[in-house]
Image 1 (spheres, rainbow, N blue to C red):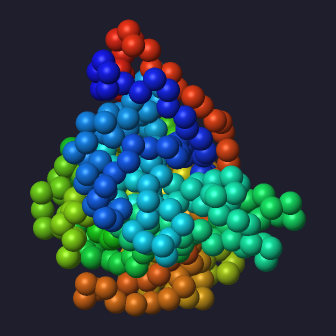
Image 2 (cartoon, helix red, strand yellow; image 1 turned 45 degrees about the vertical axis):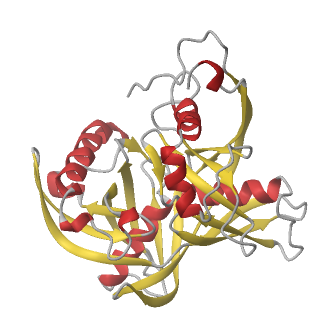
Amino acid sequence: MNGSDRPTAVRTTDYHTAGEPFRIVADAPRLTAATVAEKRLEAMRSPEVDGLRSLLCSEPRGHADMYGGFVVEPDDEGADLGVLFWHSDGFSTACGHGTIALGTWAVNTGRVPVDPSGTTEVVIDVPSGRVRCRVRTDAEGRATSAAFVNVPSFHLHSEVPVSTPAGTLRASISCGGALYASVRPLDLGLRVRPENLPELIALGRQIKAALETTEYAKHPTDPRINGIYGVIFAEDLGTDADDNPVQRNVTVFAGGQVDRSPCGSGTASRMATLAAEGRLHSGNRLIHHSIIGSTFTGRILAETEVHGCAAVIPEITGSAHLTGEHTFVVGPDDPLVPGFVLR
């Protein structure tokens, strides 16, 4: 992004979902591919679109852990909008916290009219498929919480040994729109606590690198989803009085980013694994806490089968909150474009 290719101003609306940022760009550069999944590949090849992603993720306008989305045309008239999710390492195939933020934004801005029943459905095409976000509103029509119905999520592999400099961990591989590896940090004596975050980030990178080129990082049918997108460090806190499994997690994804929320698509992946283990079923819920103490609640709406695997249809509930509306200016003589990333 140099010279005449630079935008003079970029407008964004910023939300956080359970502490994780989501920067919405409603006036993104136009993409011509037929589907959102194909638009993602087009965006990855486009210097203009990928340059805008880099600009908004990089300092001094962003930071290493920034997350956001470009609003694009949906696959067809059955959806209200499409979205390309992005972060400092590129474009992802799924993002639950972003889906909650987008549904909330669509209702709060009037892009999707408020349903007088108090629950408004926002249908969003994401690269991994079509998701439905059910936004709950108060008497004045303001969004108070949102629940999204994810794509079918399924468990693939159990107890996969992964060697790290700190010791061997065993990973569960599952898909909630992207592939995740879940490990038990307590096996190495680590709790999911902010003070342990540097060590968890290092471990997350090591685990991802160890699995990335193996058969465990392959989607059963769609090579576009190949690769371990995130590593979930899951700390089991037992069950509550209603037999709901309670867990605290932190997800390290992409090139070492940290999800401040409980991670939406990661929660769907954990639900698939817990269902495969017999711990989660239609009669209970997953209470999923983040490293900062925020919470998503997940419940299984239905059981199905995809790609020859038993799968669940997860619904995940959280809330998103407006943090600001911004106009980022790009000066013609600014030497720091798109910027830099320090971690």
